[in-house]
Length: 335
Image (tube, rainbow, N blue to C red; front, side, top):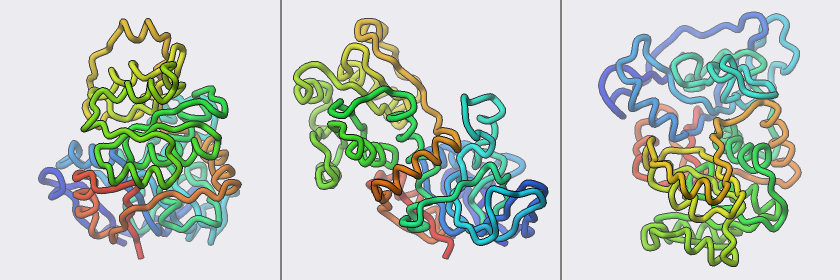
């Protein structure tokens, strides 16, 4: 079989297709024939920082596959089932633990970026029938992160105001989930074209953060100067200060991404003055994924897949991500 591998070199040039022996499932394991994987910003960071590591790293956590074989003792799935890979292979439910967090795919251990993949049966989940293979592949990280932030960690009610930063995968899923739950939405972007796409999906308020760097003022005005109940913070160093200006007293900021840097200054006066809750979000458990899947099926929500590349053309897909060309998700197809 063939697999993707981050070998010698730097950046995109380090990614290559290699030949490997076909894997075989052991006790409690399943063999997947991969149909699609989707890109996350984490994969781009992995590509940039794993070049030359020994042994070489196979990227990607998020995929859709068909169960091709099962090992002894497997009961959760059967041959022929269509499943999604779980971001954390060993986080079934409850609170995260060091062991569950260490089981993340695509960071140096098991990964989804190959024609055939072996995972423990706990590390896969059946998926809604109305979704395509491409759409299923977008769910394990981006969708689940947005779901957990909005519905597992925050305590929101219909009519509450939520701010969604940017138009990447997590924020677009956040928009879809927020509309289904009856929340008011404010979405930011540097592109007026992408903002219009968000408006067509039901966004209530739009703000271009390039032309309006102090976008918290727009949020304040849109909420009657009370502030947002929730901010999906994906920017990091470049946006946290504005998020704290935009949040209401006692609001919730879900700290998810670091698109504009890893080490933001901490405006302690704003944090104390707003009594805002800042909570880091690292994807979620399989139980959360299954709850999300039920909601996707009930509301017939379809993930936004913006660009599709052949999996052997992964370099071009990463280049598109680096350029910020996408709205929603970028997917690799295994044919």
